[in-house]
Image (cartoon, rainbow, N blue to C red; front, side):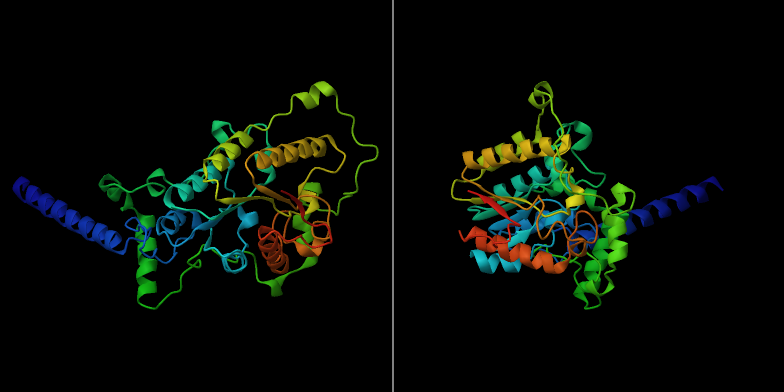
Length: 352
């Protein structure tokens, strides 16, 4: 009996090893995350449900010499529009809920793998102005990009591919190769992630826009008079993540044209004008403009009251605008990038 058990165990272990080897070979051959992608080689179709895991291969492919970095507030910028307007090959590398630290890592990956980056458009959300933005607990989201995906891949990294998630993505890629499925995100990182425009409901959108105000339309008119701020309080305002931003920009070649964009969130997403929070945010924006000037970068500020940010019908929620605004956003940034003036309605304030 013992001999039969031992023999069965050996056959079981051998079969398990063979199955594991076949599954590993399946994932390794398909290479869904583009671990073998290098300059001059096309990246794999993007099939993962989380775009941030697929971006490193787009950078390593060498197909792009310009990039968009930021959070979901920048994801609706169409690289085709920017590429045509600015004579560059743009990739959109913006990631949902990306922290300042994660954005810096993505910018670094782009800088290290592109020999002569032409342009960088970097979306600067209010998270960059948080006093604790550099704390260890705020560096990563619950879905960070594994370090081994964001650098040159070594042989020791390949065993990390064997897990259920990677098997699923490899299966999706196989379905794409067989013509049974479409790529989830366009090959330049662009995706319309907002709901279909035909489903837009203003009343429902207002419930999301003003969720932080109890779900009712809030009074967003400026405080009059503005809140009084003690000199000692304002002297203590610090924006530590801006040092990361400046170091990252300074590391790019002088020939890289950098544009820092404060995207147009709904006015309800910002502190009420005249409040202490608003005055602190204004100081942060002034510091962003100052560091941009030190490095020859352009700042485009949409983060203020304007015909875009005050209209509820332009938004799905406090942060995410609709496709017509996204179209204007991209086209206007392309014009500004060429040195033209922004639209005369004052939605974009440009500092060069």
